[in-house]
Length: 417
Image 1 (cartoon, rainbow, N blue to C red):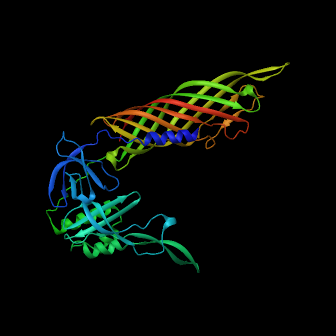
Image 2: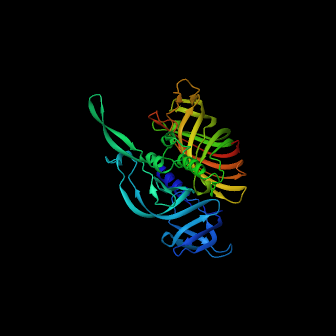
Image 3: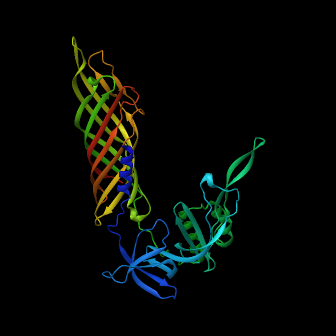
């Protein structure tokens, strides 16, 4: 069952959302140097592109071209890419794949580099999967990689050699040698981290120092990185138990409606126009039901008792969400994920007859379960969602018992951040 759920979750979340992918004003320059004004399909690329799709007019047909045919392209006030043949080091930063060589292993490649800062000194960025590299260029000279490499080394510790992870931070020497002015100090270079935003700040300071009229030509639109949403809801939950020793203790407690309250922290991933996000949502929920059963039955004796099931907890689901943009104010979304932990509060199954063994539901002993949801969001503030929580086990520690707890919810949302 869990395998089917995982496959279904991956399938749903893998559906590409093409709604509201805009063609925006831009241009490209071909190998002959001819500049074509056009409308470029803005995919808000995470990985640097190898081709682009464009239209010559708003109602025109979609055309495409590849990196070998384009020297440069830009989307007005949004992004600019330059084709360059550079020497790039693809050394892995995964610990198990680190080499013992501190020096980069350069290979020549032709790439579209994203221009982050354009001036007397240019800063470029390249991303492909987990690979991220930064390049620089001074006075329209050669584009060079800023060298940053992790590697394995041997260090002496308490009279013995141990394997350690060291870092080649040669990029700091590069920028201090090639990208500095009188107003900058060596501390500026030392403090610069090998991250896009950190090095952008360094290059902007340099360009403003060299040219007081310097201005950024591309400006990233302001985006909400985090959303904090209050999410009250109505949850219809079902609970049943199965006893492998005595069928009389197989109990269907039925479906009960209860209120829930969650606080969702959502992080918007910085690509594809903010259509993907990850979320964490601590949620208070409760379920209470009573059932009158025959606890024991024989030809001579029947024992009846009332059984109360109470399950109150704070669930902590972790998930992935994808938005489908309808217009500037409205969007649909789907999400899915896993309840990674469950904090049970005074929960269990209570047999009114003292001969019945009460079953306590403890924190950390309940099973994990998957969830899927579909919803609508308005003005990035108000939302409503239908969500289904697949079955999970609440009685795992009890050898002869098993259970099935599932829920369907309608959840409302109000984003305060």
